[in-house]
Length: 275
Image (cartoon, rainbow, N blue to C red):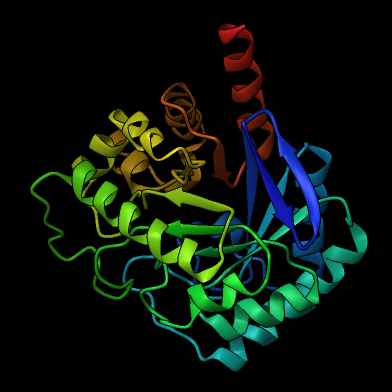
């Protein structure tokens, strides 16, 4: 499917990957993933690794709708010890840092991360893309309309798929110019999008394959699922599996999830179906 340069190590990717979410914050929208103690995040990481996770995505800054930003020093205090410990415990597992701050990205990669996941696509810190270009790591470029504090206040598009695709085309040029060779595109489900916008993106996800770049789908337990079903995020595992399966059938290369086992099973079944 594609290959990545992970700080000098070549990784060939032949099947869709699962990225497990580790939120080191008290403010995650999903209470089951607020990993505030060392015991909690180690147990969560061990469970994900035992279930076959490919990437652990570690974030210390909540980006749920309406969230408040924390300072860079506090973000570093939260994520660096986690990255250092997990890099020691699971040296074969790819560690990703979920941040929109270039300094956090640089220090996290020095601590053991080998991937940067940026919800703003370099828009919230104009040094981010240049910084990642110097690191020789994959970069997840996500589309977001607005900022986390206000992004769900009346997001508007004429054609959400075409506008997100246009954003990616511009970002691809910018990233290549900065030296980023391994770019991953994330349409940003629920980030400055209504539920209808997110379903439009899911329905037409295959349109982004025209870029020739890997596509990440981050739908796990989001309001697109639980509000449509009239349930809570804690009850949205079944719905998550359904939309993840649709995303795979539309060409998703990476699933970003809270629940690794179910995502791996969906990948196995879609692979068998395609075979």
